[in-house]
Amino acid sequence: MSEINDPTPRSVELTRTATGHYTARNSEGAEITFGRGEGLLSPVELLLAAIAGCSSIDVDIATSRSAEPSEFRVEATGQKILEENGANRLEDLHLSFHLSFPDDAPGRKAAGMVERLVTLSHDKYCTVSRTVEHGTAVSHDVSVGIDGPADEAP
Image: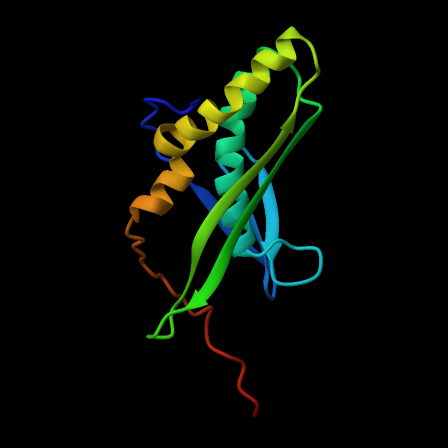
């Protein structure tokens, strides 16, 4: 809900820090390290986190105006499949929201909003899940350089 009518292009820059380790950084300097290896989220897990995070922000901002949650946890799952042509992708993407609020008037008000907010996020506001569901082409270009002549043994 916070990105409504904001046509600003979005971007991150990815830098390799070691074999299979990468850092993504946005224009404001925020960064996340990911890749393959112990203690790292994989790119697939980052996609799931992005889907969960996008809807979580929508729900959290609206409910927190009424009450601070005592629990706010969202599980994002998907099944990785191999298509007949050998291509990988996810299917059966699912978000499970687990929220609790205090047992008082503001808490009950916030709790009563959650179902509608999750639906609105899914149907209208979450850019990430809506992009995944609608399918968007991913283009690319490549620039490769050679650093100079290799040292040849005499």
